[in-house]
Image 1 (cartoon, rainbow, N blue to C red):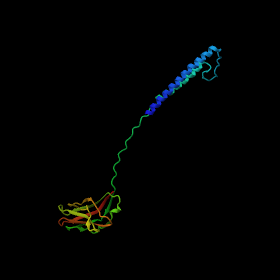
Image 2: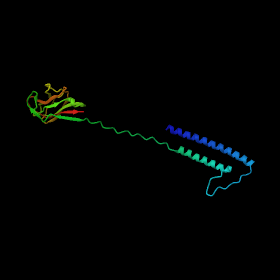
Image 3: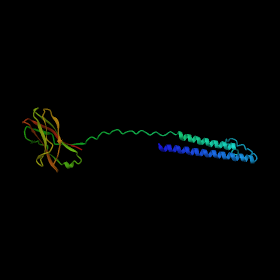
Length: 222
């Protein structure tokens, strides 16, 4: 990264500045020691205590050893700084795609259903319910479902929801099916009038055939 590169350059600059200072001091001290050696009598060398390896600072040779050691230590620190590996950026792992939430469903049953041979709309007894769409806040759609069948393969069975409060069929609820085997059939989206309603299921045949409606219900999707 850019700040790590700048840190390395700064460390090199400081290291070379310190190294230059030490060389200058070395030169100056050696010059002064040489002059003192000429003008003063030779100093008596004192042996270091037993067990220590510290070079003597009473001679130019001993001082030179100390300076060389400091320069070597500084060189090692600079090499360690330059050899420090730059951390590699970790690859970002993309989150796994989440499946879309499934729609929540609720069912309101009208009862078991019933049959008729009438060719006009007839009420199915035992299917009355009380319903108010305002009680289902957040609902996205309402559908009418039922299993329909006929006793003639070419004669349809019709079904719908009837609003007994307003004496009208519920908009979008009418559906039909022709077949001897019961089939689950669903209407389009329903539109209810506002307020508390009495709803029931109605059915009729096409030409006097036996029309049968089973398990009628309202499906609510949130």
